[in-house]
Length: 307
Image (cartoon, rainbow, N blue to C red; front, side, top):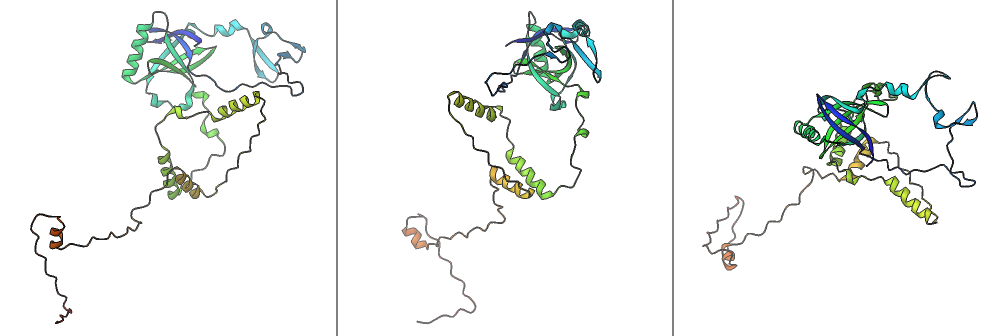
């Protein structure tokens, strides 16, 4: 892995020298713009529209547009002077519970490894955080950008997630066309909860794949091999307007709803004919003496016939 930052974790008066490595990688398939006429890739040129010349890197500086077409310029050393001595330190300000942080705050994940002779302090901090179940909220400056960070234990490694400052999170009130508070149909709500329950499962990240990237890589291989590929257009999905019908169809597609035991009519079981004591003994079903058969009760209107 490539080291993207070197410094130290600081909590209290304890300093833990660390190196930082990116924990994630972008696997998007990169494509370039090509001139269709000749097949040449297009180049991006840094050109000044006023001087009409290509500009070299050493002739480029940074500026802030405070009014339309008006800029204040900054030299590199001016911006670097804004970073104090703590720019190489991950300063832990507080320890909190991870569940208290909403995922909207998280940006990018990094791995932290001990640097130089910081192995003992690194192990101490990691064990203490694991035993207490806490994560550290810290400040860090990476590539001239200051951000908050969450330090936590990931397996046997300290990791760091950069997180947004609160004023960088746009309020929900700015989202247009949010539905107004309305009464929800109880039957639809029950069906929605049932669907969620049937789709609920432990999180297994390994079962999720980038289908688009897989299809694109396969298409690239066919094109490199000179094969002509025609992709059939996807069948448009039917727009189900009836919400209840959509919920019912979704539940049946996931798992059929078991029949209600109270509504099913069970077929009466056929009772085996009772054997007489003599038949039971003859069949060898019992070694014990047979009990005398009970006399049948006569119905009041039953008549006897003399033979």
